[in-house]
Picture (cartoon, one colour):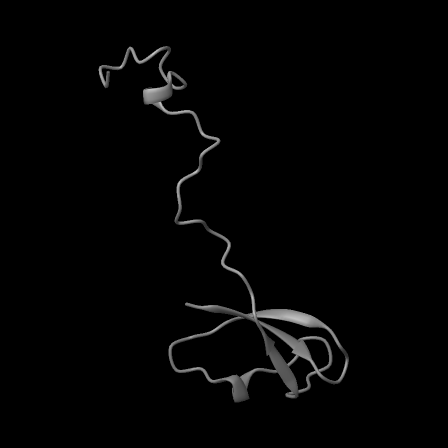
Length: 72
């Protein structure tokens, strides 16, 4: 289920909504004041799909002591 961030236009609070498959933005209400007037915010994903250069690897001798794991 995708997660969307919203900001209430009436009270100014921000909140997350876990959208179900058939749920639409018109069904979303502010949990603080109950208003249906909101703005959907852009949010960055909380995971990375790239490599992490600061994590030691076997090829640089970081994880198993000088490449003793048989990769070299």
